[in-house]
Image (cartoon, rainbow, N blue to C red):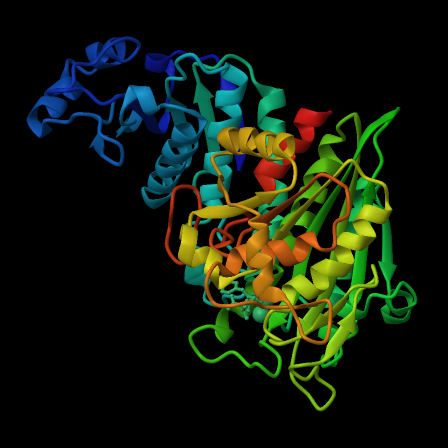
Length: 496
Ligand code: BES
Ligand code: MN
Ligand code: ZN
């Protein structure tokens, strides 16, 4: 698909579908510039239609009209933007997604979009609109043999953004960012017989080769030599070898800041001997959503090549399986910082793998560590499907991530690292248990992770909810969402 900005003004644009958008009004809407000129060309037909339908520009509403054959535009789509006071980049992303989907359904080959951007920078607006289009039109048909699944994919062939000036750089940036989001989505969507620790490591190596990153893959014995007993405890029941993945992006010129991103990489979480049951187990291919977002971010950073920041992408990849050599509930593991853990529940495996990955990250001497994990069902209970939990030992870092999230539209809610709750994780025999009581389950999980970070500013994102969606939602389609690649890119670039 071709995506471009054009300097054509609205009445002069010609093509299959032109989309325009208006803010919500109290009563029925009256068109204003630049749309009035268009309506003059239509002999006032659009305003008439608005009046007849009492269209008010509410968010989620739209009007589609077929124009006469002699008119250079075949169809006109009017979309409601909702309240002007709520207008932001996310409004543009979501509106662009709605329009792109409509254009596909209408089989429009050429789509024009003339959306207002108010006080937003035109470049930011162009990027947001492009992201909305690219993400909404991505449809993962890799595992469908039925040709019908591909029928609408060629539409639209070309998307032109009007009224934003020339924004080639912003569109390239959007394309590169969406490349990473789509990689993350596709890694999450692919089942556990396709995305394994071995193929995750291969994907990392391919990214390194393509974008000039360094790839280091530690095998089981190398992890053992580093004392990663927690990670290897989880891995020991799988027939597949664990892979500890470490990609590094080195910027051109000086390094000002070093950052580590750590992603939970359970390519399947059966629960182990604390086996999950139907109604939970069948979705556990997505338990590598953190790893997917880390690799997606690596793909973007490898293309954007921001100055001044060195970024480490770390994944302790394995499966959580059952077998004769599975961990027993009650086993005691020693992590690579020497702390001992009584595994009172083998299904709390993500934190075990992350423990060693966090210790490894801190040893690199980075300025900040951010981990991303589909860590707890409790976080979904607390915050639902659209908001991730954020925990941090550093308010500056938490604030910077929130700022990035304001721009990306991917929501986080900061949760407390309530030390008292760690009492529930006390073990009779080891330094700690890996699970506490049922209450505050996402908080105790975060407190557990904190045991493996000594002094480095650290943030933990529990993305169990937003990593996956069952229904079409804004620019997300049912399946993996690629959350929170865009926020991480935004944050990393703000440091550069
Ligand atoms: N991968 C799961 C968390 C999860 C659950 C992610 C549902 C996405 C959807 C994690 O490994 C897990 O099993 N957590 C347990 C922890 C419990 C044993 C303390 C959970 O949330 O039930
Ligand atoms: Mn689990
Ligand atoms: Zn898990």
